[in-house]
Image 1 (cartoon, rainbow, N blue to C red):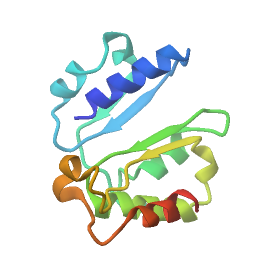
Image 2: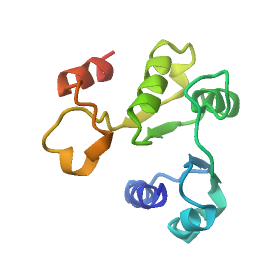
Image 3: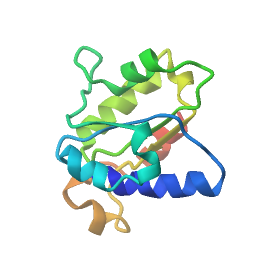
Length: 143
């Protein structure tokens, strides 16, 4: 569920005085009622939840980079948290974004690269890509 994550970020944002006017979230498994039950009441009017899977290509919607491109401007502060726990989906989106001409629309990008890492193995289980290491993560993060 994306709700607990949103709850965490809402608390951090409040702690540092950030006040977001709009949040969009996508999740294919979690029903809307379950998602919204985890969203703090003061944030519910600012959260738009989409109960659907996201696409890995701009040829099929919803493709989050396209949504960002069409709904934000360079004056907006955009945080994109990619946490689907599917290596193929996440990596396809990251690789697209690294070549994307509108990457400057995103101010912060949050992503767990699920690689061969014994510290995270108990949490990531089957979503770990055992062919990749932390060195591969650095290649993405420093690109």
